[in-house]
Amino acid sequence: MDRIESAYGIHPSFCFAHLFHCRTANMVCGSMLFFVYRIFFCTLSERKNKTMKFLVTGGAGYIGSNMSRMLVSKGHSVVILDTLEFGHTDAMPKSASFIKGDVGEKQVVADIFKNHAIDGVLHFAGFTSVEESVKNPIRYMQNNLIAATVLLECMKDAGSPPLIF
Image (cartoon, rainbow, N blue to C red):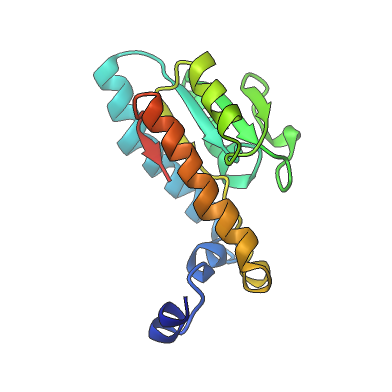
């Protein structure tokens, strides 16, 4: 991480976290969500010619809940996996299935793929606070890197549905 900081003069998670603190965050987020939906999911659903079921990790957070609502509004089914550490149940669409759990809990994630026919995964369950990541880098590595590998392993075992990370 020191090499990245010295090469660019910023902490590696700064650019992502800064996006949510700038004045145009809502506009940027909305544009990003529409872009992801239009390019990725419309292409998949047009190819399959059906509504799809998506797993949205971090779906009770700001970006995850907005993407979940967009998917539901387009007729897709959504399964939300969230610890509610930073998210809120009020932010989630009422029609979404909600599972309280951590992306790093292999059995929980494996059960989701076993019990739901997941067509795609949107992984938004990452920590974004730059200040906290500097104070507690192990916690951030555990959640943002190691837990994500658990999700990827379960996806592989389930037949590797498409992923937005």
